[in-house]
Structures are given as C-alpha cells and as structure tokens.
Length: 167
Image (tube, rainbow, N blue to C red; front, side):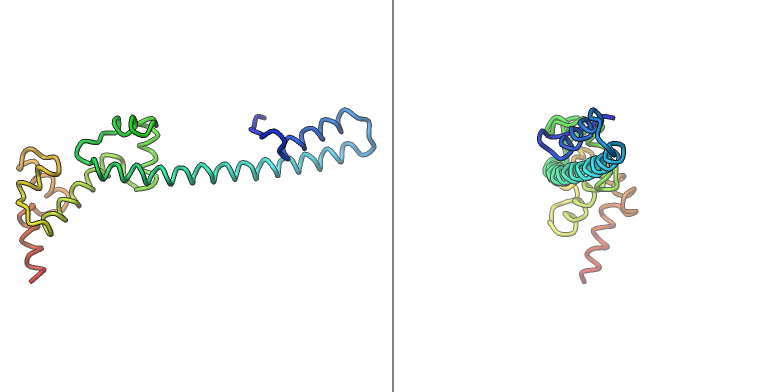
C-alpha cells in the first residue's frame, strides 16, 4: 500500500503508534493495533477526499480559463496550441473539455463558431461574407454549407427568419 502523508500528520502518527504496538509486548496489542489501523484508514480516507476536492477545485478554475481562452482565440486555437498554452497534454485537455462541456474539443469549437456567427447575423449588421471571414471561413460556400448542417438553414435563410421574427 502506498499513500502520501505529510510530516507530522495524523496519518504519520497512527503509523508510528501501530509500529510501536507491534514491536512492544503490550497487553491487548492486537486489539489496539486493529483500532489504530481503523483510525489510520479513516484519516487516509479523509485525506484522499480533501485532495480530491482540491484537485476538482483547481480543475474548475482551469476549465474557466481554458474556455475563456478558446472564446478569445476560437479561430486559430488547436488542441496542440491549447496544451502548450496551459501546459497540459492534449489528451488531458480533450478529456477535461468534454467532461465540463459535454462536447469534444472540435465539437465545442464548431458549436461556438456557429452560435457566434448566428449572433452576429442577428445583431451585428455585418454582411454574411464578413461574418464567414470572422468565423474562420475563407470561402463563403464552405461557411454556408457548414452553417446549414448546424442550423438546418443557410445563413441567408437564418437572417431572413430572424428579421421576420423581429417584425
């Protein structure tokens, strides 16, 4: 069995007490060792739970920074560049993003791009051509095709539908 124990912790104290009981020829030493082992395991469980909560708290903070970074750099961000920026492996980041968003990295980027494009179509007054460039599509036809796959409407149809809703 291997575990981490801080010097001076209760874990270390119980380990030493168990060793002393084992080495000594004290009366009731088997019963005392069982009780101390039970206390040791309780301390280990608490320590593990605390470390797990600290890791999750750090993970929550990290995912907020990661999502914010993706939002600011959605056109050029890749899993590799993200892993270099945050000093995590691409595999770890991929799993972290999927855990917190429910989408793979590429799905998340795609959803973000098209939701942003839809927002710009509805609210910005920019041409669809400009919006396609802003969302990383150099060819308008590619943008139209992917937009239609995502929303079931072409950008022009979406724009028309949004205008009709406002009236």
